[in-house]
Image 1 (cartoon, helix red, strand yellow):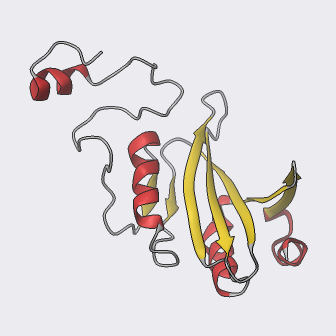
Image 2 (image 1 turned 60 degrees about the vertical axis):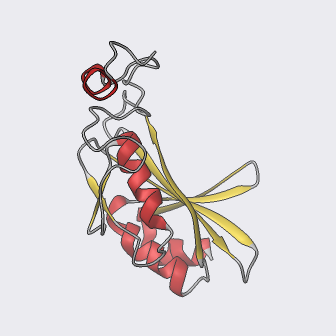
Length: 158
């Protein structure tokens, strides 16, 4: 399957296997088409997770990953792309409704937005929280002290 997709998309798709786990590194521009093909033609009917990793020293600071599973094939695949801070990705909620809350969590924790998402707002933190806690430039004990003081009436939540 991956080799067939590689022939179709060329250098925009790089298949990788690491410790027996298959994933595809995909050019950002191909993400909507690749995800749709994986769902419609390759039977990946379940979006297990959408997540991200922050590499602040890189120009394209974020890896965004989709972990997909096929019940008919009993197979899992990961799709990964890189984006720069401030860039967006298209939502895949129309392909897998389970991606709704997963994409919201990526936004909440990393600040990555998904275009055309039906409800792109924070899911874990208050809507007016400042910062994105899973970015590596967000200190481990850092918090939105203003929000804590206003809403909890204390100087620190630590």
